[in-house]
Image 1 (tube, helix red, strand yellow):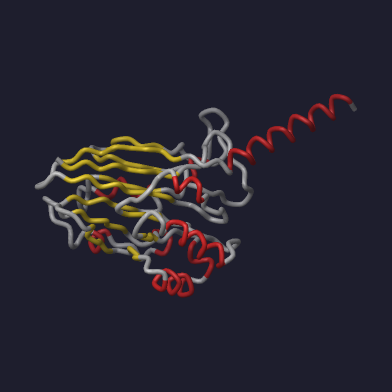
Image 2 (tube, helix red, strand yellow):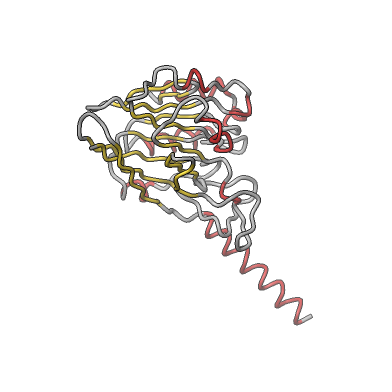
Length: 249
């Protein structure tokens, strides 16, 4: 009986640790140096896979204003009250203009309903398209539609972008990144979706841990994401969002 109680105590402590880790607020800072026609600095905030979680206002206050807020998909899912979706958008609007990219779970709250809310709140929806950021250089935010819909198009996402432009590409699902260079070579790729495996045992997990690295010559950010699917538990793949400081020389 004593061993059983000890075992149960250890299990409860592990679950408590994973629950606490799931609600951490970790902001990762990255730098990217590029060549352009005119010197310029651009700060981007990237957050994906919010799901059911409330975005922490105190965390956002430590970041300050940015040139673009990118929601990299799965802002919500079927569990998310619509009031929370609205509240999270309002929180992010403190940082700057929001650009939204569809994730596979966003459709669960009703695509037209979510689309109407985003439009009403002045959120730019990026789907198989690109938008210019204000500034001295031609800097594009380019994104495809959610890959699970089979409606995504690389050709349309890059149609406006020219070779000498600066193009920052977003796909909720980073598993298609290997195909991007068949269509265009962006200066940065950003994605989420995989949650870093969410629960990892040492190096073992359902998916690779999130990272910021150079892949096939392209700087690539794959985020662990901010929220969780199913149970609010994490281990070895801490929740995160990102600030990318782009310096153009």
